[in-house]
Image (tube, rainbow, N blue to C red; front, side):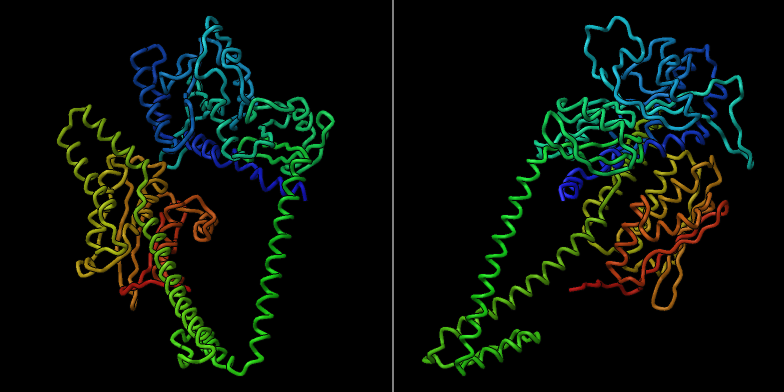
Length: 561
């Protein structure tokens, strides 16, 4: 019972997995990034100007891969001759990086991502002259991977020449960042001590920099399962140890709390349950006595009949009585109760409708802050290149898009308006992805006045741009069309990209995926029209993907009371 209670409090290894799982994915994608391949294949290691330019380009590439809400302190691609990426963060003294323990572990991993526990920065890289100076990167923990940049051309995988040095990807987090993850889940539980520990027993971080470090290190060395709970004695006092292994870093999240603290909490909860049961029994007994006593009087049949009518859903039923009736007061209150019940049912119905409307609106008006951030970055670069007219056009398009999503609060809009927004979106995305694709919208004019859910096509167009043409440099094509099918209309978003595996399609349709836009849109359509409508996907690897969105011509809401 102790373990079950405490395991619930620790929330398993979500502490690390929720905040760090994107590192594995983006570090793998970088191996197949054509831009990195071209930079390192052509770079002159002795040209400082060219190295500086390449560093700026790589910094932008790394920024594009990281999500907008990431907690990364710094990212670099490091070689023996240069550090590429962010300039104003931590540095690596010459010749110290490639001889560090960090790189030795990355080499042993043979291309796999390695997580380095919290370390002293100055000690790891033998930094001299800063012993008395405190820096914001005093203590870091790091993800490092040796990259093998490649490029796919004409169906062939091209790798860097043997004489070209392959870089190491280094993603740094501060120790305070890891502490904030722990404290976020620890909450107000002051009695518990939270740790992150490696499987070798090395403490990566503790929530409050105090606790039974030696005992925790010893316990961690003996852990063999992914999660569990056990009892241990610390300083003569029994403790419950709850632990769970992160699937991302391989580290354990460990929580420790004295048994007596848990016992006190459980006793308080049991006392609360007992008091509640007593109150419920007393109320039930009083109600039963009241009903039995009223049965002794024949006049009780009047309210009983009304109660039966109310139970059948007729809230307009009332007990008819004379003002001088000895039970007039009782009948009057019973009628008032029925009226209040009728009002309550009506209010609950209205509240449910409002809740459903609010949920639909929340899904409807979302706009990706990362898209806005990247769009402003693109406009900034265009301005720096002196292309003011092009920047102005992009700002006008972005302004129209923001106005449409922020001011138009309608759930349903004309298809014409939504397609205008989508055209502006495609133009901006075309600039962002350097004209890798072209898009064609072929919707018959007679459909343009149809009422459709706001922004329902955008997630599927975005998926085609971001995922289908991931390894394309040009010749990407997106086509959007529509056709009638009885009383329904079917929209089709088609691309000629890399295609999707059938297993992944099943994951998307069963909502076991990180494709939040597709999942939200499918949910929104089914909330609006019912379970028979929504999204289906057809795809062949190497031949592209077709996404079908079915909605009725005359839409409506489905409300389940």
